[in-house]
Amino acid sequence: MTGSLPALDDVLDRMRVVAIPLHTRFRGQTVRESVVLEGPVGATEFCPFPEYADEEAASWLRATIEFGWTEPPAPLRDEVWVNATLPAVPADAVAEVLSRYDGCRTVKVKVAEQGQTLDDDVARVRETRRILGPEGRLRLDANGGWNVDEAEHAIRTLEPYDLEYVEQPCATVDELAQVRSRIRDLGIPVAADESVRKASDPLAVARAGAADLLVIKAQPLGGVRRALEIVEAAGLPAVVSSALETSVGIAMGAALAAALPSLEQDCGLATVDLFTGDVVRESLVPRGGRIRVRRPELDHELVERYAASPERAEWWRARVARSHALLAAVA
Ligand SMILES: O=C(O)CCC(=O)C1=CC=C[C@@H](O)[C@@H]1C(=O)O
Ligand SMILES: [Mg+2]
Image (cartoon, rainbow, N blue to C red; front, side, top):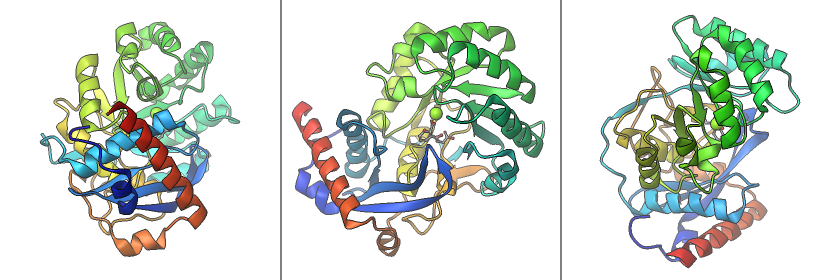
């Protein structure tokens, strides 16, 4: 991060833990827990998923502190086109979920969900294409759920629905490279997400020629500036995506999207529409398919309304302390 690490007590004094129910189950979660903080330059957020180990959580805290304690890089745009994110819902629920995203011309459809079949994916994708019409863009995200054969078969099966790209079809860099070469004849790009944000070497994908573009997330990559460095070093186009944050963390993603020298695709920053509530009055949700690049202010009444239980708040305080200790050890 730019600047020095603030003292742990300072960070703990500024933080509040919230738990916000989601409209639809996403990544197996029905409630999103998160830490929001009032930083010296603005509100910021820390929300590594509960199962993540401390090393990974420390990268998220690095980003949290960078965004709350220093100004983000100068924005090159003041609004960002965003995609609707469709969880792995049944086909008959697609219209209702998509109706929450105002004006989004792009939809990212979750596929390869555990416990579901390719037929479920086909039905969800078919319904999404029907609603979007021929002009809309439709991308898939498999979260590494297929092996190479399954990925090739699924992508060939779904190809008639006109795919913008397929995100993380398989789990490893090597598998991504194999899928990419096997589907070359289709001209459908492969995007890497987990292979960047959860990798000890986020540039391995680019070196291996395993993806056509990168999905980048500010918190998991250790902050806006680190994410910008990774994109520059990778030399690949990038799509900014959320880490399922409140509007405060979405503002961090928007700051990253606004600072990217080139931004061709719509970004996965519409996910506040998956939440039943927020911690700011004017949520960073799409209007006409775009969000504005701005820093929302915490609303203390909303922060209180969504306050997590004392037990969960204590769990998060301990997690912040452990992540802070890891950052202090390398500072
Ligand atoms: O990219 C989007 O459309 C929204 C964000 C999104 O899909 C995700 C956010 C947080 C955790 C992830 O499992 C998931 C993703 O895999 O991209
Ligand atoms: Mg993804």
